[in-house]
Length: 469
Image 1 (cartoon, rainbow, N blue to C red):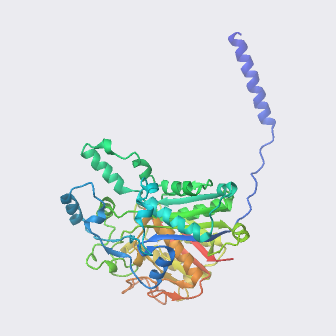
Image 2 (image 1 turned 45 degrees about the vertical axis):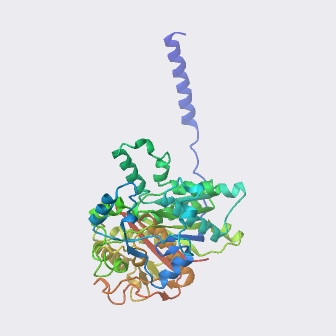
């Protein structure tokens, strides 16, 4: 066939297709997705206050602290000689941390089960924390599906902040010592943050959405909020959602020390080191742990007779668009996140009874958040609004903080107890006229509770929980 014939052939085909495309009716709108309500039916935790929801909650409301002094052994530098370990330890300006208690007693994280068993030797500690808290949450929810359809309608949304920095440090040491052939084949799967969600999905056969947010200290909140929307949009009926972190290691602590984010004044009195909203605060206490909740579509939960802790009513997000680590002094990002959560919930600010603040014990951040809360709840800050930061007891769990504190907010609503803020001896001057964080746990009716989480990069998230429908 001559070239001109080919040209006419393709030109005619092209014109035909164009005419068909032009004449065809445009697609109609996609199907309308009905609004689906989302409730919390299971809880699981691994925190510096203990392993398990019951142990952690009891110690929190009774005013215990999970913060202690660290030792060279806590830095996870087994691949280095003793002299290097001691030198590194001595160079750290902050020598306190909120460490998960390990052991075989009730309320302790059992490393033999979750880290050293045959099935778990290829996983990092942050993944093990997620597996442990997910197991508790699923048992609490009584959701261990065996039917394939149920597994396909169940997803996982568990994020982390930093992954396994200690594994990266060990691998770098192997390169320096020319021992690269000894690098574990599991190195990459151990450090990937989404592997926490991956391992939970694989363990239980959940084939719904498999998701992992990575938004620094807002990770846990974003993971839960994203999971809520997956249920609302119909992607799943059940989601296992939360955050996890294992950051007690030499490089992580050194990095935060160099950024001047950690407390340095209280090395000799560790339990006084994390003091949100107090005039003596000088930086946060690095912590570790995991928080996971089972989220479920309301009708699905009711049909199977599940225990319902609370309803997730609102999820607000925003960006500061200002600085890599510091919020803007006007607190606009925090205000936007809280306001958007309230708008989505359909509740008024004066209907919120408790706020679990992000407040990490930093001089700048705590004051800015306090002013933002005062701005949003201006009609509800004369003593009716209960406010606290639980980081006084747990330290700052980074990628797990938002999930753990969301669980605290759910438990506050469920039990009618607002937890205290530890070490609040001299409140910041921003607090006045009845607007004051709790210094003792308070029994009170709580119909709605808000949890704030803010992260480096100016990312903000607020979750609003209400009493069970």
